[in-house]
Image (tube, rainbow, N blue to C red; front, side, top):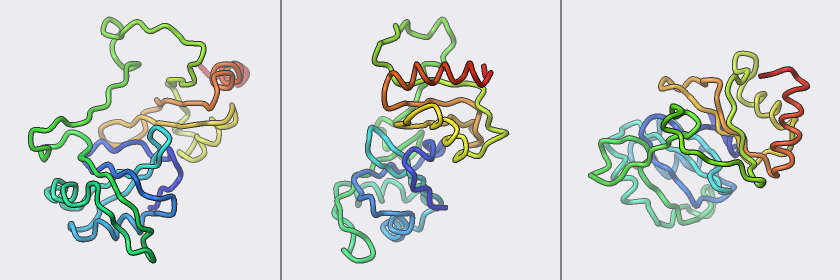
Length: 196
């Protein structure tokens, strides 16, 4: 399935390749064509990371991931017709035995640490991100959940957390475009709708 909406997919829990630097015209088909030489793709997920569109690519044959990264990183790809030309950046993402001793990226959510281990951080008047629990995942699809959240104000990014089996766990981060929307409108709306 082609997930082209920015922020539509959370990062995978399985080892994969993080791809950056491709143009907005790229869809799942273009990514699949670029990685076809490495045994084909199991899945492609598009997301937004620090304002840029990225893709998480899981190869059918995970042993080919280091080779794909080595051969494609900082390389010009595309034919100018089916695939718009660009220089892509590729890196291994996740806990992988294929990292050859290099550091692997890990995501740690401070809000999920037990309270004694959680650092003391004071709220900033410019904060725009809200950590949410108890999201109504049984009542909404991911797209509908994003639409519901957008009703509180303009969204910059939605990052829904998943369990090890990749199912949504009713937690996530919502980053609004402005502080006023994120903390004013959002919390007032939550109280009005009676959610906790």
